[in-house]
Length: 290
Image 1 (cartoon, rainbow, N blue to C red):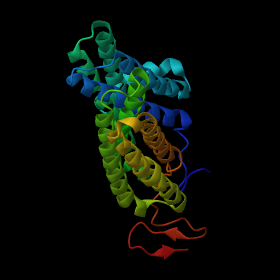
Image 2: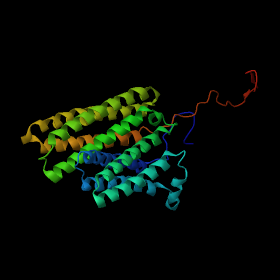
Image 3: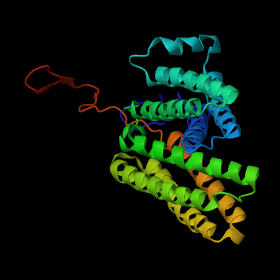
């Protein structure tokens, strides 16, 4: 028996589902960041295509997780109640708008694709929030952390692409400052989440969250901020900024992976009275009868 009054590890979402949340956050974040660049008049068709491709990779892994893949279209029939259905619709809108933006180069379409990508990430976060039987997922502050880390991951991947495509010659200080501020905001969202959820966790999950906290502080916040500060010195921009971006991206993905694959314990059943052989409980009065 795999379930009962004691907490047990859920068996429905595995590494393929975790890949969807991880890749979806990274790709969606990149599309959002590219939309912000479009508002400044500098959208990147390359970043848009890569962002949508990473999103599609995550969705494809979920499709492979389905026991009967040909029934995947059923996800579209419950829009009023299912965040998974909303995720599917918004993903389709993002791909359609992104394709039009790539084809036409219209700034408005880049911005629209970014807006739908932001809603896509929000839908993913709300899917976790609706998993009310899992204490580590149902905490409302997890939604803010998912959104914050998606923005960091999008900035990090966007910075890497910027360094590759331009050699880091243009706008490096602005990228470094944005990454530093975003990683700091992500850490604040993470610490709030951990503080609110820790008391409800079983020891195994508490240890996993503690390990993720060390990653979030050292490799996800302190080191990237220090390295991003090097953008103030033009002679030392490319390598430190690239390392900062890689660390910010990798730690965000790793923390989400921990939350999804190691903190996924159900709370167990709340049974005020357990059955005892040879003892019968009366319906009224509360007296035991043998």
